Length: 162
Ligand SMILES: [Zn+2]
Image 1 (tube, rainbow, N blue to C red):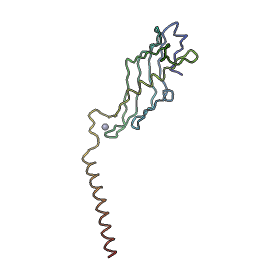
Image 2: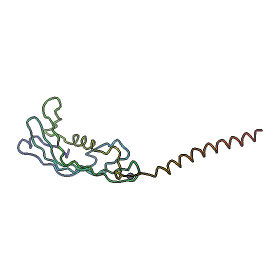
Image 3: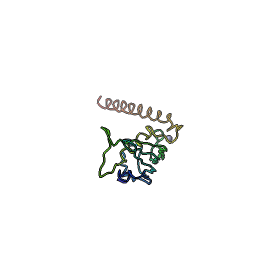
Image 4: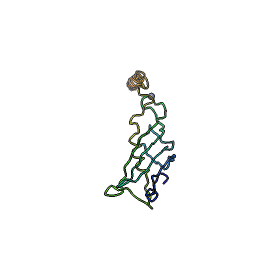
């Protein structure tokens, strides 16, 4: 649990967590074929104890490997959460899990990072994609071509039978 806070240490002073979280630790599932997580999550967080819980604030940065949904070109998308903040209650129904005096921040970071994933990754907001005219032509020719071949083949067979 590299992205964890020890509550005992937090009693004395705020805790700074800075570094990079390996892909396997972040363990994020993009649920999308066009997005891949291959780079560690860079983070620079400050954790402080507040009345009923923890307040985590700081900076998250993650580079995603994406494929443009319009032109299929691979590109990198930079996720930047410059002023990320998260309140984790230590009391009440929604209190966070504490294991050996430690709270793992990874699930909360993962959740908020996922929300920032692009829904339809584009290499450029103005990407015009693959020329739509050529796709239309291809579809039309292959479609009509097949039926023509089919019908002529049947015609030939009919001739043979007669
Ligand atoms: Zn594109």
